[in-house]
Image (cartoon, rainbow, N blue to C red; front, top):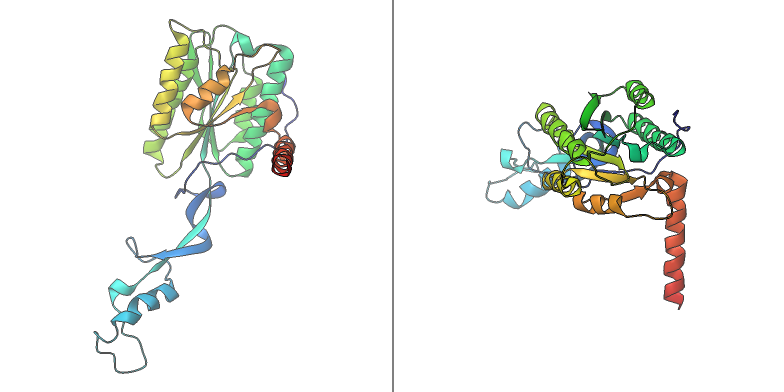
Length: 277
């Protein structure tokens, strides 16, 4: 099933402030960007913060015997600039390719959503990786790379069907992120789990998936669940998974940037009406 045309998506960020390579996603201390504060140098002085350095030196002038107009500076007075910009991240997709996701219209919409997120990651200078799970296990179909073309090709060739080993997909993600953390410790990950939340692979499959999600959450991995559940009867399993991971759950409709804008407008309208009442 071919994917739908890509579209502009909602922006997901890794919480906190990183120190990774410059990019266009999450907040970070970078070599570029704007100066937000000063600090004592951490190692070799990078960029002198002149005002903060003079402020640190000024109270010490009498004790240092200053006699002329020039300030008497000491190494301990030196302050460096801390600049705030944005970093690139590792966006790791964990995609449910099981039978419960295999309906033609549904899988086309899912592929369109993932392709849109892949394009967004490329524009933000992220690295991307992709794990799929179906049948009896999970497979790393795209090791972390900067090539969105390879990611799109893997997505188009994605086979579907079989049981839903959700725990295997999450545990494979944990292992991939562990290895990548050793290779590039400054690049923070963003985990995107694409699923309806069902788990049917093996004994106590749902409980195993919850434990695997707790393992990722315990490692502080930022995550978002793309909720692909459809139909009139919905179990809310993807949202339960998102809560266990400690991240938001977003439907396919909410993923679109214009859809998010509409949600914000609706929320503000409701808030205004409540205040007026």
